[in-house]
Amino acid sequence: MLFAPMVGLTHSALRALVADLGGCGLFFSEMLSAKRLPSENRNISPMLCTTEVEKPLIYQLYISSVDHVRPAVKKIESFDGQGVDINLGCPAPNLRREGAGAALAKDTDRVKEIVKAARAATELPLSAKIRLGQEGKPEKLLSFCKMLEGEGIDYLSIHARYDGEKFCRKPRWKLLEPVCSQLTIPVFANGGVFTVNDAKKCIDESGAAGIMLGRGAVERPWLFNEIARKLYKIDIPQCKVDSGEIFLNFISRVEKTFAKEKQLGRVKQFGHYIVKSSPFGHHLASKVQRSNNIEEAVKHAEDFYKMRSSANELD
Ligand SMILES: Cc1cc2nc3c(=O)[nH]c(=O)nc-3n(C[C@H](O)[C@H](O)[C@H](O)COP(=O)(O)O)c2cc1C
Image (tube, rainbow, N blue to C red; front, side, top):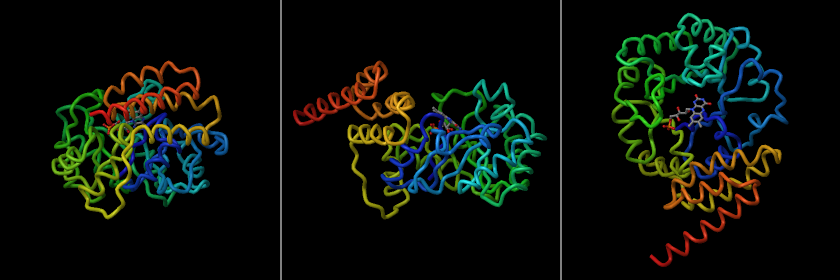
């Protein structure tokens, strides 16, 4: 199972927390600009710090020019990354303006050129993350994926939603089946897996080699552990499921990992998701969002989870 790349979320603090809970087999960085990466300082950049437990770690790049490929890939090699992933699915406006992410995927010739350059630059595993493309064009998706395979991509992750589809839409796992059955490289299904049952349905419908979890694993960081044990029957210890403990654990990791001014934003972003695993969590969410500093956020979290545990005792 793969932990999906997510800006503001899949940084070292959350990856390490998920790694400690067990069950995740592959971690991704947040997407990184191929243009800027070569000049980034690993000791300073909050997106580049990492620890030994978050392995294998794949660095995801968004790329706007073939000229940026080699220097970025060499930088990843220089800090011992275990793989390079090319973002071909993100529709964010800043990427669209640069012609990267989903905008790049629209230009097959440029994608080909970029993948060729990446393949020539490294022997590290090379992967790409895409969406389904446009509605009603399944043959286009298949030929695009075959092109990626032909250019030397080692595995593929597909977010099972069309370009431009909102995350609240139901994922279309069935549409991955022709790709999964006709490619020889592993294809991982992504999108809308929040429970063990979702994971089973996703695998059954798509025929994927495995799954990539995004928001589901942020809301419930123990989801990898649960799916590993219950669906894949992997013999790992069951981790403790306690949202309050996990939230506070996350905050203390953030404090150790990031400079003071970078901490609160990350706590708020994670807070938005983890509260969904507790009844009445939205009350805590709004308090965390209004917090002016980490100490305030911690106090709100402690009070909320203390109240929840007293309520549970009364039930
Ligand atoms: C906050 C956030 C940030 C994301 N950042 C990235 C990113 O950096 N690169 C990427 O390929 N996808 C990114 N995605 C998309 C996720 O990787 C994933 O494809 C999407 O959330 C669907 O999976 P899920 O339903 O399991 O969350 C992001 C999604 C979210 C919610």
